[in-house]
Amino acid sequence: MAQTIKKAIFPVAGLGTRFLPATKAMPKEMLTVVDRPLIQIVVDEAREAGIEHLIFVTGRNKGIIEDHFDKQYELESTLRKRGKSAQLDILDQDLPAAGQASFTRQQEPLGLGHAIWCARNLVGNEPFAVLLPDMIIKSQPGCMRQMIDVYAARDGGNVLAVEEMSWENVHRYGVVAAGDWLDNHFPILSMVEKPQRQAAPSNLIISGRYILQPEIFPILESLKPGAGDEIQITDAMIELMNDQPFFGVKFKGTTFDCGDKVGFLTANVAFALERDDLKIPLQNALHEIIKTHGGKLSWER
Ligand code: G1P
Image (cartoon, rainbow, N blue to C red; front, side, top):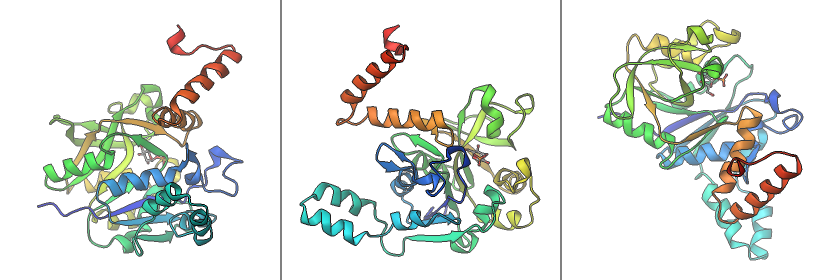
């Protein structure tokens, strides 16, 4: 039987230059979708999938992430005095149990592959998950849950979340070539990081969720920089494909690439429109604001 996935890596060392000045003093992973930070949303997804140990690969100026996953005594005692039990419950649910979160630093920005390698001693010799907080996936059950189901059905191996992307945007992602489909998944035949549109083997991109075997670590250790002059996890996976199976899972759900401003803003609207307390007032406000600015909403066509 495939070994259970108990640990997840969250690479959160990136500088977030695309969101400056918002991210000058605050990590980009703390930007919020409605009222939950991006990092909290991906941690929720991991915990829903049964992940027990959260490993954050941070960098300088990322201390707030560690504080976010800690108790806040002053705040909690104020909420208690004011009888704000709903808010206290939220804080309580979100708090990992003592010892369930670990933090390590990527000292230099050498790429995603290097960030994952920085967590090798915390992961040890067992398969693990990786969740990139830039990619927020709205789905029921969560994307990582869907991947773990495929991992169990295939009795192990390596599993990547994939989805179709418009051809003009494939060059921004890792891209895979699919073998024969079985329900919602397929064996991956090849992959390439950030190909030119003409060189892309398909328009199936890697959506920022991975289940990987620990044999990836020694490969990362000796890997040369690839696309963008960075140590790429995709290049390490290409090497591991020589020895181990890789599967792509076309999960059910909607992805918002929150590394991009439009993706981030759309995520806020989409998540808010699903909330009973926000749906109607937000619809009305969007209607008004778009009218004021001379546009039209699609339902007015
Ligand atoms: C990384 C991966 C890429 C993947 C993408 C998803 O790229 O290298 O394969 O498709 O995440 O967001 P990055 O966004 O770090 O450039």
